[in-house]
Image (cartoon, rainbow, N blue to C red):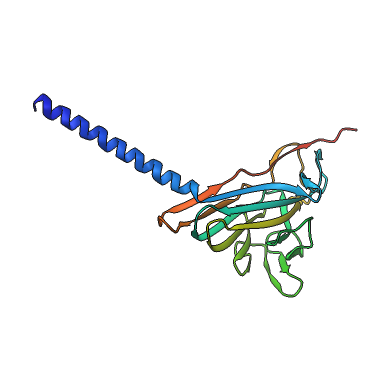
Length: 227
């Protein structure tokens, strides 16, 4: 093969590489450009904690979390999901903006916080009942279920379509539960996450490509109480 052919082959290879990398960047940009999601601890006086730090081993705590979702373009098949830390349980939730923790659209009650125990979720008028298991409880477009020995709470919110500029919020109240030995969490000092961090996924209406966004879980520090 003469030098001109080798040079041409090299040029084509470089061109293909540039096009391919541009395509990868384009796809990556589609995944992050259409949806934004965040979660934060809130209290009725502004950003902060429902129960303020410091947090100590063996004490019952409650937190109020606000999850905010915004569509920067029209998106279909929007689904938001997350899971709570293994030391936490869901107390209530709401889809409407509220100024302070509760009253919620839905309140959760447990016969006991152990695998297979009964759970009921009510909006004050209608009550849905099932068990603490992977089937969980479905309330229209919102599904809650529990997994693993620690009964991690998973939830999934099937929103559907969102137009450009649309804005949705979800408020959760969670608390520390007890472990299988019936000890109040948290049982040891250290760093904990109240949740894994919500994930939103959907299909960008203009491109037909998948799009989505994530945010990190909420981190706290737990201390051993000293006398």
